[in-house]
Image 1: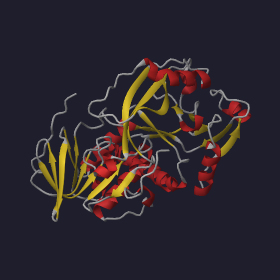
Image 2: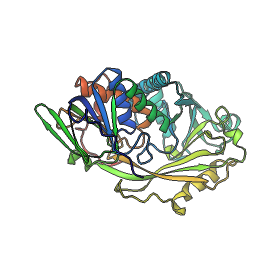
Image 3: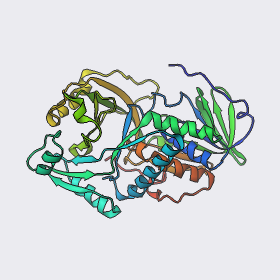
Image 4: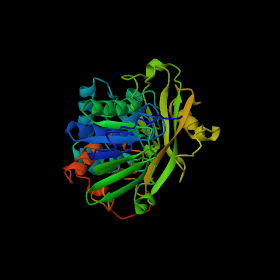
Length: 388
């Protein structure tokens, strides 16, 4: 698909306070936060608003209040939910739907204990349930007699495309500028600011925020070497009776220690049941094959057959997306080697729910040089480790 350039001649001749490179999920949230502060700002996006070329495709994204990846995320998640509600209020849209979530480890690892420990550390509401309770309260899910689960009552789903569009449109209402259909091909920093070169023209800004998703060519080489641009799959299935899988009837679920997940129907027909496994690694985001092969959906077909007896275990829809994973599956958020360039990348499959908080932090860093959010553990300067 070709995207028409919306080059702004005024932008190309006047310096900005902050220029955001990439207006996908993180770029959209950063631009919204900058515009709320009255900062002179703009974003450059090679595609269009809420396009289908990035990592945020697939209708919805999971929000969860309890993160087994660590209690450091708990305050970031709490702030994200506040900001999701603020964006809803500012735009008059519904972006977050609370469904609750049921975590089931299926004997995979110590998932339930780890989740409970994180919840207790952060003071997050939760409940541990046994097999009898699961069968009584959540009869959609087939479980073993020794199954343990944990309920996260604040979990839900987010409308991905609508969220990105809402943030960008609101930012424009507040005075931000958005250039689409241009690709950034070079960034040069000097004592007076930063020059950003696109395939159409040049722009100047005091500072730049890089939120380029899987397009890592503009990152410092030492960071891009720590990223794996990977191919992931999303799938949808038909329940035998879709009304039984609507919000209020069906709780979102995470199974096998986080490998599989599902949310209620959003279209009245299908449910999303996804596999977080990576299909292939080290792909080129400009040239990867988005065709869905039969063998790709075999694992989710089998999982639906195992776990959801009231769902037809043949994928009725599937789509391929790419995502940037760091070597430790925690994102890079902060300044690396140039104080004028702030980086937000490598969100490793769990950035969307947190994106308003990360956007706030990136706006802080690009205007004040610091943020009140405790994100030192996400510093681009942290050492490389083996992938988990």
